[in-house]
Length: 298
Image 1: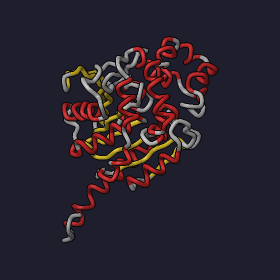
Image 2: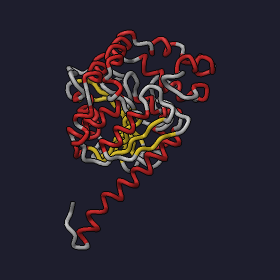
Image 3: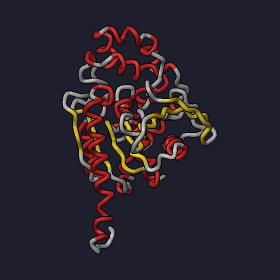
Image 4: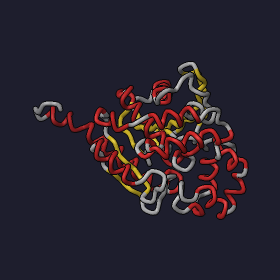
């Protein structure tokens, strides 16, 4: 296994917004952009991206400072992260794309939908950070973890973690997976390998704790789906309910699944994303049907 790669997808690198950005691309069909979480990388989608690429054009960037992408020039907020994802979508001619964000990546997806609505067909918020992340304890703990970067140590021993259920429980237990022992070797590689390449995850951490997405959710105009692990101990289901209520979006929970749902249950995530994209397509066709009947566009 090559560290931090996505099998079956091509890797590309370009300077966008003054920094070197890396992303993976593959497949054909309706475009889907996959945005990983804090301290992760495009390889986090190792289980899900190949499944999506069977019938979709998949883009999976490394966020600024993560994986093979250079740190942002400045990151007082989430704008720099969202803009680089938008640049990748534009460069690949993939606008508008369905944007699927996991954890911190869900906030990036939200910000992209606000800053470049023409680039975003719809958003899927998978275990979205941002609400519990603003609590006092999180504002203290997250920057500390951003400095210590515990994932680096786990990355060095990831091949042992892949082979031993006890080590998977130690690394991914409670905070990450509902059943760490059931994580595949591919999922473990995808979650841990990017840590070897990170150059600046602290800036993203600080941008996260400064951000309160609830102040802007009413301005999101594209369709949204809230997707959550029913046993997520990092961002509670109460956060999912608040996102769904404020966005007026459906909420889909995956049973016996934790925060790392994209690796724990890629099959269920795939079904949710494809079903949502079908629904987005139906919504897009409604105004055309109404106009044909002589009804005004809404």
